[in-house]
Image 1 (cartoon, helix red, strand yellow):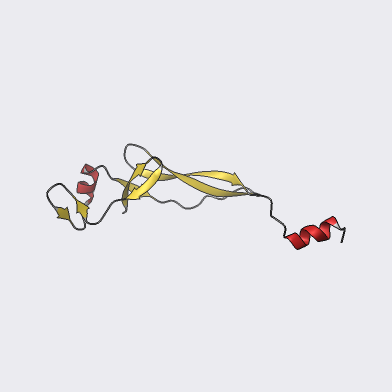
Image 2 (cartoon, one colour; image 1 turned 45 degrees about the vertical axis):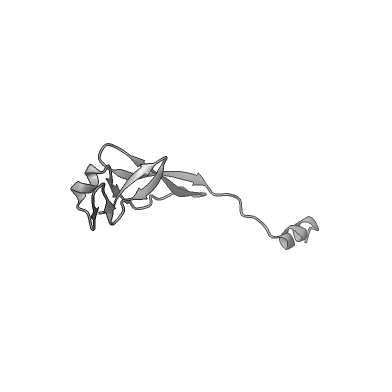
Length: 92
């Protein structure tokens, strides 16, 4: 399981090795990471989006874990190339 912290909405993974005041711990156990303020990170499958939308996420947390908070985003209109624009403008 991965551990991390949220800082201003940005996910920071737990370091390995973990630097403490008086030592460095390689492959720190979960309980040590939790004492240092790191929480388990839960990854989830991407939910199905409605037609014309795609799914994006922000990281969120509760008292026990960090998780992906999914939301729908409207797909932008496809851009046309300069050549396609000229053809359309000339009615071709």
